[in-house]
Image: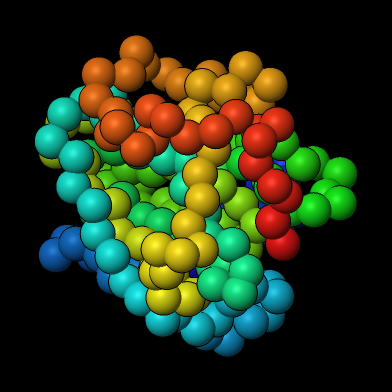
Length: 181
């Protein structure tokens, strides 16, 4: 795996190193030792999948607060997504800043999201599926969110949003979100 740091400290783009021949390829998606060597979470408590039927669907921006804060590793299994993270860490020099990785099934890239970040994505194709590894279990009592169109954050979504949940539509702006750690 190739770990490329993003502009937000602790976040990485993770590319697969494919070993292939005429039959196809083999690639490692996770190695505890390699993640540990980069100082990243190396234990996953839960694995989830999302499917979005329509292009331009937006999901996010979601996070969990302590003591259930979680790191995530996200990979696209079908289609493509514009994946976005926002730094919500208390005292961070990049608080409120965002970074993105375009995830595609063909490319195999992943995004590693440390604790303290909001996460969301917009689908770039119909029938997009994302696979998520979470470092802690989902806890409804600790979930939080950030509005996807907060002008202070200024995320430049690539497409006009055509599908958004009622919950995501009503998430608060950054000024109303308490920093997390």
